[in-house]
Image (cartoon, one colour):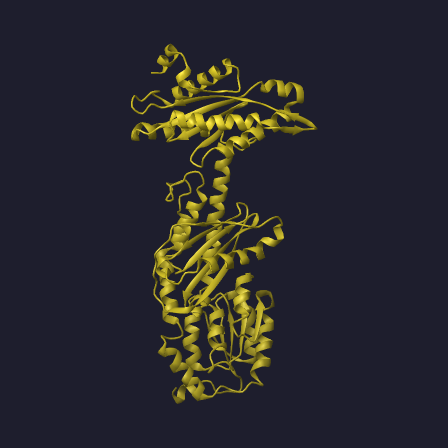
Length: 515
């Protein structure tokens, strides 16, 4: 350092570096600071680092939400470096985020204050500066040389990541994800896992995680995406354990059981600039929306720890945007379910059945695969309503629906066709397979006992089954396939009820109507 630079910091008042970007905060602190110190203000964290080693102030006051380099990392770089550890730093938190306060506590700052108590930072700095032993010129020089030898206190890395954030437009990427678009995971039943995978894939373009996860309270699930770049050092069990442990802290106030099912989504492969270190860093950010906290974003990285800690501001922005877009996705899925779900039985409604039947019918015709469907009717259901009342009938219908829902495969569909009639779809299943499945269901219904106000109610079910003949394309439409199943069901009724009948039992002249 030249003589001119050293002379510039001499004077009756000690020099303080104020790394303050927020204008309201600066206007609040400017007067009290200038009464006690000579002040040099910088509005960018990276610039503050350069000024720090150029002017060598007696103390630093910084806000956490600085652009370029967060105030938390600025404090950490000073407080954890053996050459600058004597330099007092007062830190003001820009946002009342739990994770921001957590990292700030490990920054080495002499005082950490919320924004509303910012003026106290000036007094803390005044007390800390006077009795402290000054940093020697040799220590300053060694600190400056050492940090710049590593690229200028991670400034290069910070700039690279900030540029990537802008170029990748992560906020736009998340906002543009199509909730109703084509699934990348091959499942249209629940689009939420697909959306989470798309969101974390977009996130990987600007934040190089080794593992990332989203825990959702309502569905009691943890979705995990791993980065194949780190496949040799990944510890899935440890990450899942850490994610669930953090999630419990936020979930505690909701009450009820918490044992999420873990789903591993397809991996990403993303390598970003910056040194990789052996130590891992774990972040957890709550996902909050209009109705409060509904989940947790968890991230594990193997980058150098300081690089990730400075990025808290950016990480907070990403977490906020992910919260907004994920809440939109959950709301969309809730509305979609309401539009295709029967409110009493929670089965698919008639509209959803017709849509799925037409979709599966076209697929069967195109690929010459088997498709079967069944129409089920509770025998003498009117007698149940007349004898016990409609509330009893509803309870029976719910119990029967649960048996049907639990008895079909994930690829099948159980839906309420209307009244006491329930439709079943069996993709890639021939007539024999469908008849076997329906006979099993019939027996379970026959053994069902529903207790209503001390009364044991027993019911039976008649089931009709139809199958598309892929060789002759018969029946020729989804509508006629439903008609055949309906007629087969009445055959079962005519044979004495509590039976399963296939469309092949319909008299020949009736079958010819559908050819």
